[in-house]
Amino acid sequence: MLIVEYRVDSAVLMETLGSLSSVTIHIEEQYLTADGRIRVYFWAERAETDAVGETDTTDTDTWSRFETALAGDPTVSEAKPLTDATQRRLYRITLTDEGQSETTFPRWAELDLVLLESVGTADGWANRVRIPDRETLEQYRTALRECGLEFRLQSLYRESDAASTAEAQLTGEQYVALVAAYDAGYFDVPRTTSQSELASKLSISSQALSERLRRGTATLIEETLLRNPAPI
Image (cartoon, rainbow, N blue to C red):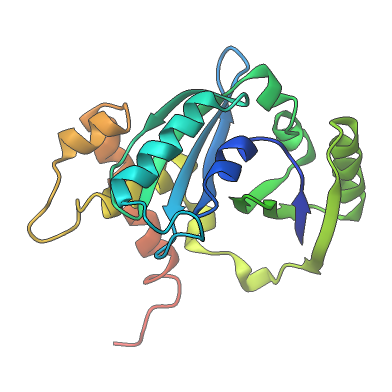
């Protein structure tokens, strides 16, 4: 397997990011709904010190402006905040037709691509993706060109056989549940949010949340503590 790091000038969320240069977006999960829409979970992270021109904004002002920008972004519909932390918030969006025309995601399963990291700023998108081989990379670049998207290669290298991580073994749903739970204080002592409150924010049942947390935790233990157990 190969790891490719590249930049791409997709317009997805760019109007939102362009209006607040102090916010960075990290994609966590994306999938196709039953009716063919692309749904995306992402973390929006506010800089510790806002950029020039935004120095007088409070935390509340920043997130209010961000959500106003999301509501007016032509690539976004159905934007919903799932957490309300000060520096970092989880959102769920559905892409509009315009947004879907700016991504090759529907072809990722066909090409066997795995997203490892995707970071959006006002300067564009920086991605890190696992691909099977160079032939697939060329097919992917062709798909990007067909969407009118410019591909700028940053780095290409072979993945070590030992590079499998616990994160790669988690499902997207488990990852989102675990990170959202941590961010909301579910693992704090004492807890600052309940299971039902967290489930409501994620728009799932308490039982579904419990299963994702338990299975995700079990996977983390198996892939870290038990993969190379220390001698007793």
